[in-house]
Length: 482
Image (tube, rainbow, N blue to C red; front, side):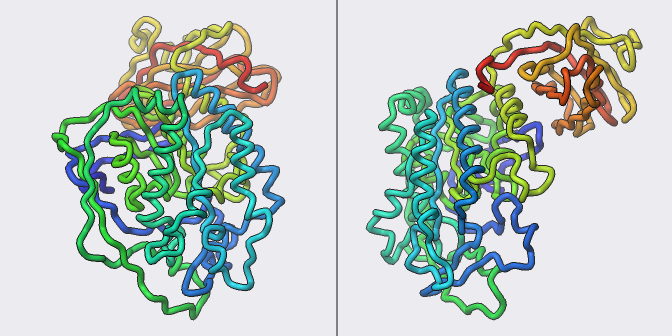
């Protein structure tokens, strides 16, 4: 992966995303397409071509055909986003949400006669916008400026003709619109002003290059085409002064976006340029989706050690109808809606509000050996898959309680937590962790389907060393689920 034209190390785990930034002199708006279907839907109907051939060689993605039956699930997503936004605000993080509009709406005149822009599709963006605003979420509208842009039908349109993503022109319009929305909002502007300004310059290429934005060509019906290639004018965004290899600034702005926010589209560089700020990019592709992507970021050291002042959450409009429990996605990404909120909220909490539940280590398993105990902490050498520690509670955990600790799992990429208690079904929770020799923050609710767990076993797995320290039980805001 490239950032500012130079390599970075980007390790992604369910515990978090750890970014190690190297020297960043020049960032190119890379034009490489990512072939992804939103939320893994392509695996459900693989026999149906994803691409649609429109008029004048314009190509479209069939997943943009939204239906009125999506409205109920869209409402669930909007409610979750509203609740999540309140949690962020209470913990000093300002959220700006934005959505990349449907290509089918922006260029509906090029749809084939067999595909119609329905009234529901035409009004979906506005309906989502109104609902989010009513829920207290700031949504920066991209649909209106895209529909009204004089460049929409120029020789430099806003989307690639052969790709599902916006092109450099659209990315720049999106960045300029996001900046205008931030500046016009007192809270968001205050968050922006609280971040350090950095000089970025833009260099526009003198000759056009062949575009690599053509992901829809690979998913068309048989015997489609050929299609005339597209060209782009390359743009370089340069940070001045350049950073040394060991310079890793504390970034106050994060973009958690879709594939439209991947570095290759140019949107992030456009944002860096118009905002004149360093920006951390933790965007994910459509098969992962915004819920999993956001949760990964919240669990990362990047958030836990340096939460942003301003969090820009960019969505593809076609994914809003898919809440965490959306069935047409890979099973590993499916989650109960309420449990997603409980986990996300726990990770956002900047301080622990003590629960009335107290925890202690039982003298069984690894804790039965006094050699492994350092006061109230467990510090061991190698562990195997059958070894565990057991945490007991003086009364059953409630839904708003969550466990907080610092853990080292050197060599093990998974922690297994097994909740147990009278009147409840035993349940296992798998937490993916970095598996290195550093202590990382662990926060997790332990919801049950009964009266609450009275004890939990923690299995570190096969590791070279395991540590669990600073154990406490904290409490979520009482109004989180009301």
